[in-house]
Image 1 (spheres, helix red, strand yellow):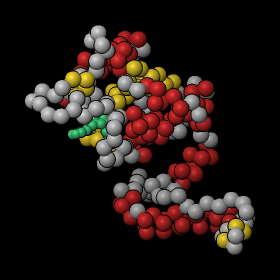
Image 2 (tube, rainbow, N blue to C red; image 1 turned 90 degrees about the horizontal axis):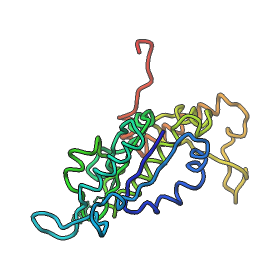
Image 3 (cartoon, protein in one colour; image 1 turned 120 degrees about the vertical axis):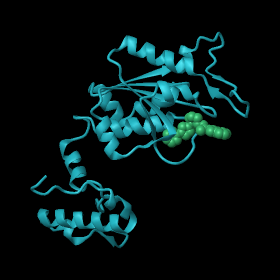
Image 4 (cartoon, rainbow, N blue to C red; image 1 turned 30 degrees about the vertical axis):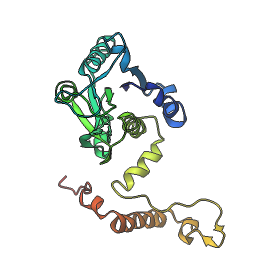
Length: 234
Ligand code: 9WO
């Protein structure tokens, strides 16, 4: 997968992408992430990427030209096209289900906005889709882009172990079951006996029940929208 990110602050991404799993995934060539400075695509001699809003009002709006030029340039250099995603609070909510679909796309171009808004023509005529990570306003689309990349890359084949992904699909759509590690007795608070029993089938069932109970109590909405296990009719 090739992910191209367009932002006025490409430096923000360095730390997040150069450690841990995202670093390893890039080293293993499972994903390539390219950062692009939006200012490099400004035609303005001062590399301006924002301007005052038509109609008046406070703040600045991001100009359309640099975004269009960035996407055109990226596409020319690395065809084929790639899906253009604008990170925005107006977008469709990022869910695990949407991530799974996105993980099958070969090329993504992520556009990050700043300031008080983005010229409407970017969302209308350049973005293929708009994605939101939740109902809050941030200072820009960069952190949402990091969230998207982090959640996406771990789904790519070879990034996590088979076993980790299987474990995740075992309790698909449920919250995590309770997990423990050593010590057995931490300041009088003990690990449940069943986890020490060595009875793996029993442990499996216990974990599923606990995950289900916890979801019912804390996030019943997740059970509503959950993919139902299929029966023999499909
Ligand atoms: C700021 C502002 C200030 C005064 C009046 C109106 C205003 N609108 C905005 C605004 O929406 N700023 C955005 C900041 C411009 C585009 C990038 N920004 C952004 C993206 N904030 N939050 C996101 C975002 C993206 C994805 N998921 C959640 C939030």
